Length: 348
Ligand SMILES: [Zn+2]
Image (cartoon, rainbow, N blue to C red; front, side, top):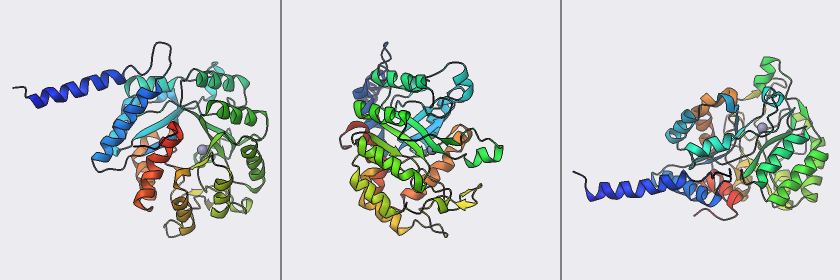
């Protein structure tokens, strides 16, 4: 027998799903308002179950090798609220002429309540090509994304690339050059945030400060807080320095995708996640900084194509970091900061 309660359940569930399926229109324009209510619904559902959802603001993949259903299932199992999963345009795709990868559209077609439409990750050869930025800008204008992907201005080879002997991503592009100005002003005009991968080196700090000063409305997420690969190159970067940047630049954010206490960067043989003590506790000066300015720090997993299947391990490491913060700071960093950045309003 169908009870009144069953009927109610059905009526409540069906229109909500039906309405979410309409978020991508025939013109490829994403309805941000509809997405927003789907996101809020999902976050609140996880909160109501007594779990802490978070918004992963920075993960990437190779869209041609992605198992979307498997990622979506993992998100449910791990209580991950939302993901800004961006497609990197790899060398092969680039050579085939791809300048904008519509992965977000595919993600939203089936899972509009958990993926944030995001631009593509910018690595060479894509980032240095004008038409890559043209394509990202066109997609931004058409409202196909809420934020731009991670753009690599200074990127040392990752530990895994070093192992493979792959130096493709030893990237050095001046942040105050033409590409930098173009990206910063795109953010200013569109109100959309963008992410930078920018290794921490003394000589790189002044050009970034100059850009932040020249483009005060650009919303910049500096990925990988306190990830210093060579400590001898980074004498100025301290919690006090980051606090000073936060005070000077109201639109500067940091994501908290960094390794665990034991993570070593092989080329320098140093433990590059500087927020940790040798014994694996969160250094009080970094914790105090995050507690003092929680609105400027964002959850992030930094999954990539070579580690998507390790999502549970990355989730566990990220939660291990979050749980060392006071409860209200955890909630701020986990999803409230990203919410405000995306929607210019408090989550509620
Ligand atoms: Zn990065």
